[in-house]
Length: 497
Image (tube, rainbow, N blue to C red; front, side, top):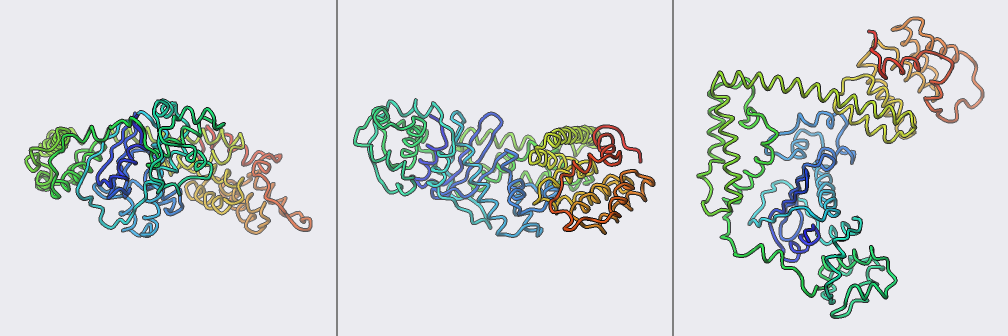
């Protein structure tokens, strides 16, 4: 049974040092260990990327998050780049990395048919990072979090189990300790379950947890790790280990790079600069620099990386080929921009539907994605502000986003009207009046603004507004104004400038 729990058990109790690679469908993850502790992770899953994590934790500003791609530098951890530029503190970085490491690992627990490979290494280069997570806690949290999978029962039901070292029993809940107390030497799990009255899902997960924490031993434990470690490979020296780690980092990024990015030169680089960059990479990644007796898979990786570097050099060092390649890049960039714009509009339409269904939290999530894809649409910020007025804790953000919408389209009355209505509802009469007057300056005779100003001139009842009304209720007033505009300009029809 291929599962993260078994690998973590082996790494922890053998105090291993190295890298665990995990692949499943389109998921790729890399977990790095030192002396049996998890110290670093990499992932290609969007929700687990460090930038996403820092933003969700409130460590990274929305502006920096929206422009996160500008801070990506080859061969550098994005968090360290953000810290160097003063966008996050070192403490924020460590908090984000620790949270990311947990999520990357715990999200592997529900998967029972992924592909794993562990490579032992003498030393890991993680300069400036002091992150470490104990594996027993990860194992316990991961197994409790995951849903029951039939593979667990299939793997464990034919075994006989016996008590072992109780050193990690402190990780167990009282209910789990009750299950552990039923286990005697050479017990049958199926027999224990039969007379325990426990729910099967909880029981099999508990037995697996005991095994992963080394609290029990199995009668015919499959020696998957020992089998894979024969015969003992020649140890890789510190220098070669460092080179292979650098090569692997480069290889992980290279698939998303163009030829200029591979050579790390600007699009206006001279031939001398291109040649210098190529020979600089050759001094780091040429196949002749690596030992001949390294693993076949590592040799293939080295050849593949250097082949890409050579292709980039040949394309850019020839003026005709470079001109043709530049044209291809320009066409790809135009296609990418159109694709991103289309994706942003799809997210926006989905958010609009959710808003109309009063599913505001979900609508906010889709709008965040739309704005991240295209942060130049006034309509995106205007709808986000409207959504945020529904949630009292987001009123400050709503004000910011109304103002952002106004800055993007100062000629449109929509942003002024929305912000004015929010101020009016909060009993901020002067501010509301100012916004409605601004709406009239850009659209003289605007019926919604005129109506609202007239309403503000009426004397208010004592106490004013006690509660923030729903912005939709304001829009449902007998007026054409903002409601009419939102149903046309923002949600489909072209806006007249």
